[in-house]
Image 1 (spheres, rainbow, N blue to C red):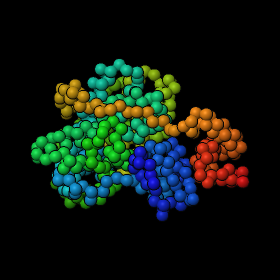
Image 2: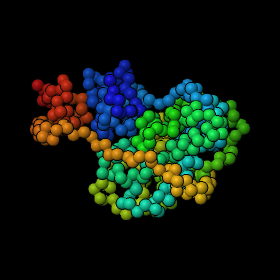
Image 3: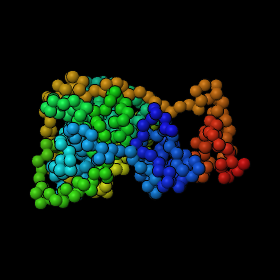
Image 4: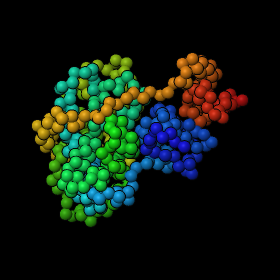
Length: 421
């Protein structure tokens, strides 16, 4: 029975899992153990980075995203595609074609999230100018990075910019405007993020900074790809090379690593992507090695959101497509800057509540008992071979020693094949 406190974006299919340890070895937070030849995810330690989903060679780890069939429960259905979607159908397919195809497959409205990205770029510049708090300010766009900071770097939580990501800002606007226009309750309007990332579902089901997300689900690009491609092929001759989208290259650029800082035009900004490089730079920020940086953009997927595990296109080709669109659509703002500043004054972009640190639990809630278990862990660790083979079902010897010290059920030192009983 899963802990109701934790919501996650993946699940293990026990029928497909053979306990091969591949997922366990790539997990950056050591959240996976192999028990009785099956992968078991520790809900508290999982940050929904999707590394296990990428690595599983047997398709035993599946994302928990919204199905397209689920959208029918709403009177008005709205698609909110990530700019990543523009990179998935080849370099000659333009955003307008894709937005039209979304309407053709059943959405009543389609809103280009790239426009909201451009708005947030302006709002971030405003935030940096007005707030002289310690630096670097860290982007809040990637929900996995936020979780990573809460768990592994709780002292950095105060550096996360107190601003909602573009998908939530767009959904907030859409709910209000469509409710007013159609004179129906906001509850009858379903807004669905078209996403490359299963973690978006977690930020919808259990948002960190608001009581309830304005989004009603996240549909994976993989789930919707074939329908869109079929529609695009039918319409291909009518739309080739159209460039009528209202978005600029600033908003579209958010699909790749560096896109967010390109939009804010701050020289002293740094972009990092990939889970291990993100951990590395956050460690450097925490230790004080990183100085004189205004803004830090961290995205957990390699090369940014185009590297998300729910994409279809090769990420290197996808990046090339996005760069082409950035050049084509240009770097001139198409959003009314004064309007964004008015919204900023009204705290339209701000968190409803602050993000809280959530460090991993100690070895024991009781301080004295925790010290005792720590000493036990150190004694066990000294006797282990230190080769981190994973055969015991833990990712490394230190984790195995910790599990033993905690008194994990049915776990004995004999699980180590080098020591035996």
